[in-house]
Image 1 (cartoon, one colour):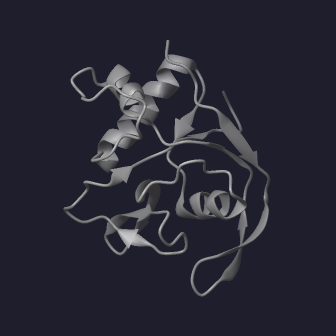
Image 2: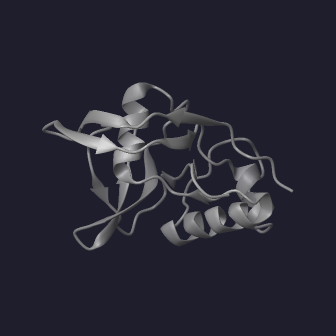
Length: 145
């Protein structure tokens, strides 16, 4: 069974998000402190290389979602991708230890999945064909299992 990621609970409440900033309510969630690593991804997909502790990059949205489903099945706890509001609130609160250049969210906008990243935490990037820097982190469900 895989190790469960270390998560930080971010309490429910209003947050200033986006650019220009606006107040939005975000429900309670628990987000992984760090991005999923190559070694963690290799346990899910053994053909994935390398197997080191570096954050996985070049990951498609579909593979990130499949990893969340696999982790849910393996651990009995519900894991998913964060929505972009959760990702930004966690980034602004300083709980993301290693925010990557681009990280998948579960948000859909303007015909594409949304990526968020460390260079400008308020900037929304729609997925394109170049996913070299795309990684992800997980959110653990706070209700249910």
